[in-house]
Structures are given as C-alpha cells and as structure tokens.
Image (tube, rainbow, N blue to C red):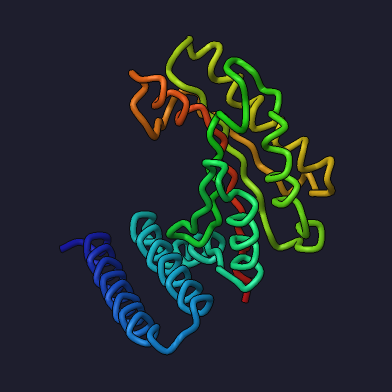
Length: 225
C-alpha cells in the first residue's frame, strides 16, 4: 500500500469518527430539548445542522478545517428577536395570503403572493404590500447582525429574456423600499429566479398567481467564537 493511499484511508477514518461524534452530540442535544424553551431548542437544532453540514463539506474537500470553517460561517441562530420578528410579521400578514415560516436552518421566510405584491409584467410594488414591508423594516436598523435576502419569481408565461430581469427588478423594488425605510442596503442581497422553482402548477391561473411571488429571508448570524 502506498503512503498516499494510507494517508487517505486514515483521513477518511478520522472523518467518519468526527461525523459519528457529531451525530451522537446531536442526538444528545435533541434528547435534552424537552427541557428547553422554543428559542433554545431551535438554536440548538440549528447549530447541530450547521456543525454536521460543515463536517460533511470538510469530508468532501479532504480536510476537517475547511468543513469546520464553512459550518461556522453558515450557521444561523433563532434568537428572541427573531422569534419576536416572526410574531410581528404573522400579525402584519394575517388575512393577506402571505405566509411566515421558520426554515430548517433558522431563517425567517416571508412568502408574498402576487395578488398583494405585483401586477403581471410589473415590478411596481402594490399598495397592499406597503404595511407588510413597513413592519418588516421596523427595528432592523438597530440589529446589525441580521441579514436580509430577497428573491423574486415569475410564472412560466413569457420567455426567460423577459422573466429573468423582471424577477430581479421585483426583488430590487422590495430592497429599495426597505432601504428607504432605514435598512442598510449593504445588508440586503437580491436574486431573481425567473420562472424557476415554481411552488404551484403553471397550467392554471391560480397556480401561476402563486408562482408570481417574492420571498424575503431574514437571518441572524451565530456569534463567531
């Protein structure tokens, strides 16, 4: 057996041991969740996901240091202020058709359908969306650890040459509205997915209306140790 093959075998074994330890730690953390508050439990689970993801990436890259670094950088926490923001957004969006959820990696996701966001072939924000965005922007100026990501979508009608820039422009309109209300533009990332990643059937009008949407993500970085 050559030295290079032997080193690879040792590294793979070490990685498996690290993954096993992390898995056991994760199970132990989950086992203790019964005595935690919702905030503590969500934070613990999110941290476990980040650690396991980092370890897995480290294995694919051939080194634990790479994986640990990416896991730390990618971690989000579900803090008291995130829970408070979720509750405020649920109240602000009640009865509008917009949905507010917590993602598996501890981001707050606000899904806004077209009937309250944009007209067909338009990137101009409808007045019905203003109160929701006003509530979303409230307090973010004093929370520098929180990041915002906005993703625009269209339905499948039209060509990519039209839909792709339209989806970006919709995300940009939301960003500009938030910036005008005090959110630092440097904390906001935007993306346009065009007609990709539909959430409903594009063969019906009701489905197309659901696909013409904007998704806003709010995330708080875990403190660097």
